[in-house]
Length: 95
Image: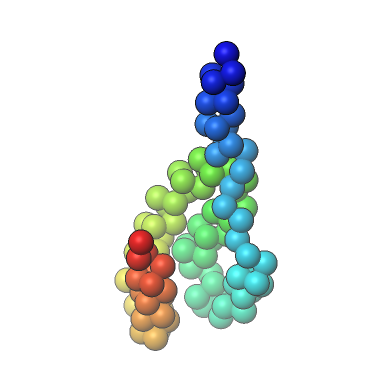
């Protein structure tokens, strides 16, 4: 009985917690220029940040990834912003 309860609790720990974004990173999002901040990527990112469950965040990550691809391929986004975004993605995707 104890092992079943422990297993259930382990499974639920991911339901009731979420990935917490550092306060500094959230403050920096407010300094992004308006023409970039109004993109679908930033609305999806804010949606992901607001979610309170890891499972909900995993589901929202698909929409965020799609919006990220659209963000990088948009002609309105300056090339230097695309370069920085791609560099951040590549650095943070290493195991």
